[in-house]
Image (cartoon, rainbow, N blue to C red; front, side, top):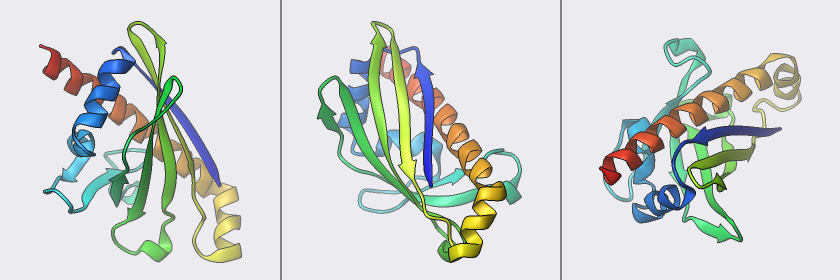
Length: 157
């Protein structure tokens, strides 16, 4: 199943790209439940509604090295459920960082997941869970945009 979500940040793209490239995935730490040292897992709680534990899940998140593609910086991202991985889909995605003006940046997450539980899982996904996955990604992107905006502002001032 394919997912796509956008978020807009009132920060120049070059500042965001510099922040992302500078710290090898630590830019995701403000989203983490428990950010740990180099080489260890980063755990992030994701879900469509942050305050409802039944609709959220802790995932192990990994961000690869940023790649420059023309005017866009692309960061490969994967997340996997940290508990009961067979019941929750993982996500393989690209986070794209693109300038849309001197002071605005568009973050785009394009991802793919495979519903667990085979045919039954795909049917349940079509009926309900794909909407939950879309809401989860939108929530993640909103929190990521807020976190990056704050982080760049702190670095700048």
